Image: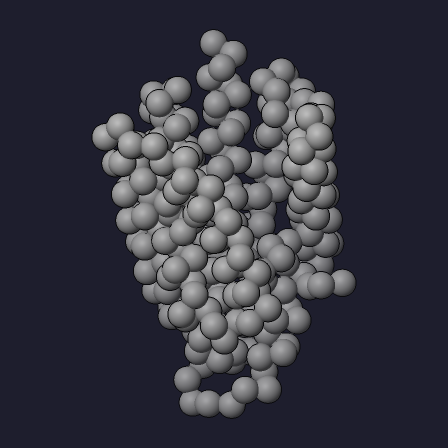
Length: 246
């Protein structure tokens, strides 16, 4: 088992292997929150840049592809080498920002107002789940964690299968369609992505309690951003399916 968080970048093995490092400064929840805000600010700056270029008539497809590929490579490096997080997470945030800005602008060009709706829904879900977690309305029990992890892994396998089959011109039924079944699938994926936030909150809290090294604050911020980006993209896809039925 790779860990107790559905988010593959955050699992208990990560903090266990970091416990061997000594030092005076340790990870804190407030520090992780600050790093998260910094990371999201960089992401939004990149997104605004790509967004502006799109509506100024420039082709931003290179930013979408380049941002996605760069983000993927950096995510792998950060996941396997957390000590590099303070240096690579800001770069990752910029790459993801360019990617999100490009695809958001493309969706906005098709469906006016859809990106604002997706952003507000993402923020609302984040705040609601954070409050539910802090008040212990939702508890990250072992069964809950394992269930979300299994669902997340299943979705990842389906997306990977869809990508591979797409190279041969084969599409996975309903995954990208705007049928009622397709919309239902998107709703389920959005729910699973949202529940990963609960696991991220729990995992960061657990890391702070264990006294993980200070640089793990950047790693925790990275994990949260991975989930938020996924949630936003899935909400954007869901809204586009609903809009296309009108």
